[in-house]
Image 1 (tube, rainbow, N blue to C red):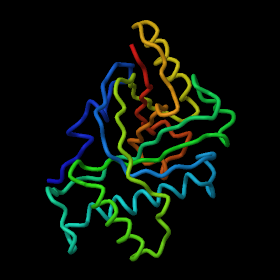
Image 2 (tube, one colour):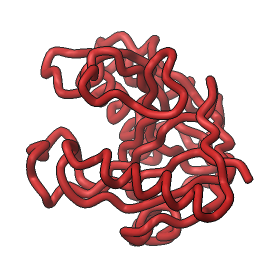
Image 3 (tube, rainbow, N blue to C red):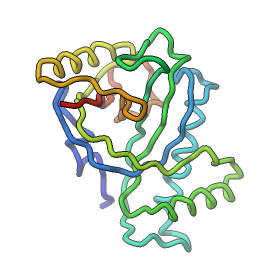
Length: 212
């Protein structure tokens, strides 16, 4: 059976629907940076998702070709994630001004995938799909201590979950630590490409950066 990161690391991907503190270890990701409203069908965000999955599945299926990755084992591609922020706003996100959102869309890489394997996947996907993958990067991120909480519901209800996390931080003696390299972090357990934003079956995992 293929290794499933959501099942094997439930503490990272399946938290409770109330805030808690967790430490996230250093991980490697496939990443694409951009800006704009994520709900814009012709916007930059929608385009980045296709780029990410193309590379993710090129790596996943590499064992069927000539490029053999040392230590490879069959696995389920981890869920889509995203770092979000707005210029000049350190404490919050203005959900009424989504055109000004900056993002880094990411998909976790298995630990056995090296930078060289990633670069091979870029070349392989470029040759096969005839698409420009120059915006896709290999990102190493050491997130550290976070407040994490499950959000179930529409994107419109996000602020209520974030407020709970802020209250939890204050009550437990933590302070918000959003900086130029620490961001509001979302993990999408339901595929955002296939869900109605108003559909309450959508599930997202939230992490908010903190320091004690």
